[in-house]
Length: 459
Image 1: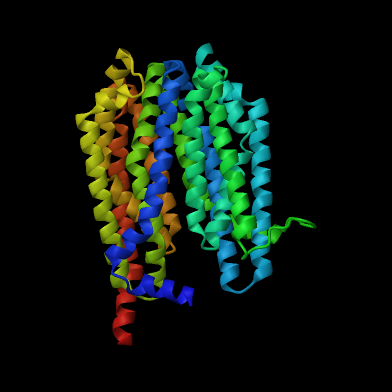
Image 2: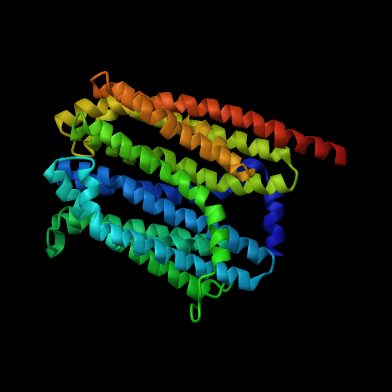
């Protein structure tokens, strides 16, 4: 009965109300995560600018870790949900257990990286002994103790696959709040704790992840009666793992692309000054506060579009996409106004030096022009995934970040001024807009128009 009510709501509730109802909890959760990202870097910037630069240079590896854990979770989520829908209890249990196994295997890879390769990774980007020292300390702790984030992401996806999304808000919120509380205490040695500097920032991060993972495991064992997570006698199943990654690898690739882009951009910016990489890192933290609400809206929009695609309701699909695009553009315009009018204020939160302000103010103003069309492109990409055309989303992401943005940044860097490099972002977003419109036209012609004709003929 509960399932029928939910399906009825997806098909009959006014789209605007439905979109807000489904997206709002995810937006709140995403904003908490974005706030954590910003405050974490604010505390690190109080150590020194080299520490902030080190955290910025560490981002590609941390993002790759998130991409693999989240992408694997997407594959597990899809297989587990499908098995439950088919009343295949053993299939659901096996999907969850193999997912946990893959999370542990992924952790072992990054554990090895953390033990052996952190110094080498930073030396490929900079020859500053100070930045390498800060970076190696920070990243090695994050990787060696990364079992927290892998287990957190996996057990959260198991909760989501069984419809217990409210629990994931608690786990994500707990991790962020613990991190925010521990950051200043461990970095600066408050309340009698030792002053650990950048190591304190890393420890606060992994402790937040470990506690969030512990809570996610507890919620699954205590409240999730839809899957049996007893691993006694478990053996990895190659067929199930292939099914998980058939869905998960495209998601991993999409999220990993930004790791390659950031690594390449850091290499380009370091040719000018390490301050430019610190500015780039600060921009990424700040823009997450603008973009995260839109990603939260995506999470609410995708099931609406997918459900009404299955129900042959192109009118509701189009209205959902149109409303999501409208809200996304309103958010982006607000972000554009903030970045254009108050860049000094935004940078001042990160203890910006005069040199950082000189580079950062034009950087924020230039990059933020890409916000004008970014909201449209993000909603398009998610719509393609919801309508079964994830390859379009992957092509847009690949084209924007690797085919256009990095080459444009390199060519603009040849002009000899770092201010020119920032224009690669608006240039790349225009290319993304062009691709999005082409693919949107194809989606409309190949899917939405035939759906409309099918519905018309059936009446």
